Every structure is written in C-alpha cells, then in structure tokens.
Image (cartoon, rainbow, N blue to C red; front, side):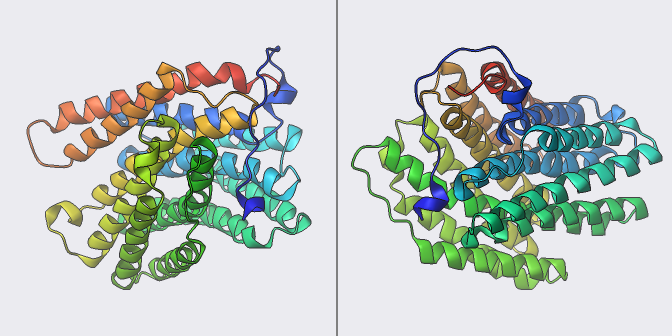
Length: 398
C-alpha cells in the first residue's frame, strides 16, 4: 500500500525565476491551473453569458460537457500523471509531450466556443487525443514500473475519453436522451476514479498530519466498492440504469462508512484535511442520489438528473479538487503544508456555492439569485487558487 499512496513531502521553500522547464516538469503544474481556470470561466459563461454558447454544442449541453471533461477530467489527469511518477518511479509525461497535450486541451476549449462545425470537429478530435494520449502514457509507466494494482487507471482515463467521444456523437445527431446517457456514464466513470484515488490518499494525508492518528485502510471494502462501481458503469453503458441503482447505493453507503471510520472529528481543526473528508462524503451522498434517480424513487427532486449531478459535481468533485490541488501541489513543490487565509476561504466558498446551487434546484422565486450567488462564489474560489498558486507552479521545486 505504501508504494501506492506515497506522496512527495515538502522541504524548505525557496525562490526562483519562472521557467518553462519547471512548468512542464510534472503533469499537475500546467493541468491544475488549466482546470481551475476553466472551472471558473465555464461556470461564469453558462450562467452570466449563455448567449455566447451558440455552437453545435450550446447552452446546457456545453456546460455539462465542459464541467465534466474540460474541468474535472483535466485536473484528474493532472493528478494521475503526477501520482504515477511516484507510484512507478517513472514520469509519464514532461517537456514537449506534456506541452502537446496542454495544446490539445486549449484547442478543444477554443474549438467548442468558436461556433462552427469544422471547429467543433477539430475540438472533438483534440480532446479525444488528450485523454487517449494521457491514458497511453499512464499505461506505459505502469507496465514499466510493474505497478500491477494500478493497471486499471489508464483504462479509466481512456473510458473518460471514449464517453466524451460518444457524447459528441450524440450531440451531432441531436439525440438529447442519448447524450445525457453518455454524460451520466462519464460522471460515474469519473466518480470511480475519485473513489479510487481519494480512499487511498485521504487516510495517508490524515495520519501524516495528525500525530498518533491511526486510521484503518479498509482495503477489502475499497476493493468491493470499486468492483460494484465498475459493474454499475457496465450496466449503465448497456442502458440498464434500474439494475445499476442498487450497486450505486451500496457504493455511496460504503463511502459514508469510510468517512466515519477515518475519524473525521480528529481533523476538524485542519482545513487541508476536512475539505477532503467533506468532498468524499458528498461523493457518497451523490452516488446515493444517483441510485434514487436511476431507480425512479425519491420524488420530483431526485427525478431530475441535475440533483445527483450537482451533489457529485460541486460537493464531491469540487471540494475534493480544491483540496487536492492545494495539498498535492504544496507537497510536490516542496512547500510547507500550511494554508494561508485565502485558501481556507476558497474551501468555504466551494462549500457555500454547493449548498446554494442545490437550493436553487427547488422551484422557488429565489432560483435566479441563488444560482447567481452560487456561481459567483464558485468562480471566486478558483480565481483565488490561481492567484495564490500560479506564481509557485511556474517556478522550480526547491
């Protein structure tokens, strides 16, 4: 287990001039700020300037695609490309190859916004290549480093890329039901990656930070959790949502049980830890909400796919992301694991944005103010991250 969850710990911080070589030395350096920037921009465009989203993939469809594959998926790839270097002893991607996938990512973002069909095709090809190239690089180092227990990760990244490609195919055919099917499939696939990573690193981070804290790794439960999630993904792929519902329910319950066994009261005074605990708990709640949605139970609120999507996407992914891109960036850049006030505020902003957005799902006269408030807080949180971390990300590791 130690070889799987080992994370580089910080030494003494130092200064230095910005360097392209440093910026392209590990996957997290360009992809964390790219995903964080797009999390802010994409949310702001959808809520405050939807008239700009008039291409083949417009409005809500663009919003769903960009938040999952353009933001969350990008940061997940950045994390995995970085963590794989620790797990295997081999850096999957740096220098020119890393610059190429960043360029592919930029082409995709610009192409979807351009509004023309040729640009849409170019964007789709660029983004599919982004995920498949990343999956290939991960598989190469997993094999080279004999990291057998992590061989499934490249397939999950490839699965994200394929679900994205099928989503775009449904967009071209104008089949809304099918594209939302592929969106849900991509969401659960991303949730599986989050479960796999978070259940390993959260206990490790907590035990390193809190003296004498002992947390059970719950390895067998975690393995069962991943098997159930994989089965749910396969059932959803074959449009057997009702059969997948009880599996997702069990996975969500397992996630909440894990959080309780991780002794959350022991980290209540450490924001860099409790934000990860809370994100993992939201992920579990979101999977339970997904089960209710796919099973057709729980009333009108769960009948809308927007409910599990925002519980998982904002509460689960949002909190896990803001916590991970601060904790792991500090560790890999040799910085002290200490947060300034701005970063603690950003955690609270994401939490508040999540609660406001969920409140906006209820049909009340306050829907628009709640939605605008949630978006503003979300955008501010990620802009604060960029303001604080971008100067460090472009400089060499001490």
